[in-house]
Image (tube, rainbow, N blue to C red; front, side):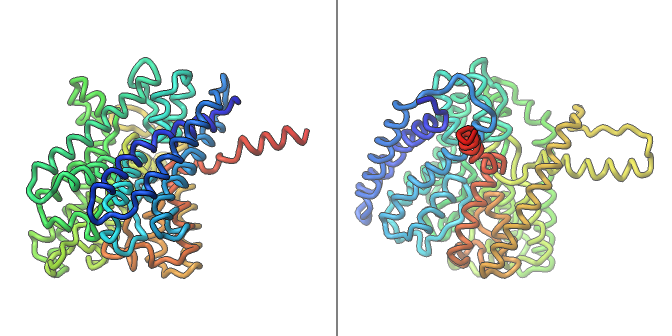
Length: 492
């Protein structure tokens, strides 16, 4: 059978089985765990179904761009459904299990687990692993092992992770492998740093390295990073999130010896300067008009702005610390508005971060500024520049189209979630958190709460928006295109 969709789903499901087996071993080796069978049966099912789909299908010689996007969307949906099985067999309702799985693979970090630590260590490790798979992407992993994908493989990578479609190596498989090599290297380095710091065990280090490299935000503890009450661990995680929020194309150049590539990247410098400006403003606002002093304002403002600005979503609310402001729902309103702003932006194109992306936000702002200037000088030709490079007008139009669609979907999601029972602030920030793959939100869904504050129908809506945000809208919109064409051909 010639089917790119079936082939890709098969390879992706097969690739999930090692992660499930690792989680099973952790669950089996933990004295308080009880979900060994759930993980083992899911691993067997994932491997069996994946192998069957992989060997029964072939990559077609030719396929359309719509098929590429549909393949990515259906692959992610299949992995999310299979990834939900351990939660379902471990007593979660089917819709909550699916929500938790989608939140994991999309690297969102929102949770419906009221008491995270009541679950077995293996199940919680599976949560961490789902975010690690989703950070670089199952399709990129599949492309790295499929020999027949050439130009189409590059299109698949770009459809799953927009901005990652630069050809890093002469062959597409080499490009996909290099992306995963870099990703694994960052994860290993993050685990080593955390393990070297006081307070983090081997389990803690590996678990948080998975979700830091993925800018995901899941933690096996109810209080997230605040569980450690360690400034060193907070700084290490923040640095890891910043690394994950930078384009992996730049990391590839740096590994080859060109470290100046970071400084020369105007988008990366814009992103870092934006975060720095927001941190300084938030520290001043929280220290002057809030209840915390300058030191705690600096610590908690920096961590939370970096966490949300990179779409990490970790929290640092320290148990028993009544003086800190890790709970950003108690920040002054102006600081919370700054948080909403960085939640929209996210990281760089080609990174593991979610959000609108700094490049698009910058181009949209420069376009507005150009229109203002052209009002004063109607005959002037004013190109938009990114550093020393002129941005093609076609790229500007695509960015503006994407931004418009992003805002419209955000409005639609907010309306749906508020109609399903949430207040406006919680509904708006919850939808924005889902679309930007951030994790916590404002209002009732802050860092000390969970997404059980939303009604069950609203949580399904938010899960859909997580996938829309992770795959950047187009893949979801086109996932039914091949089926529609096939039905139309049969009618003729």
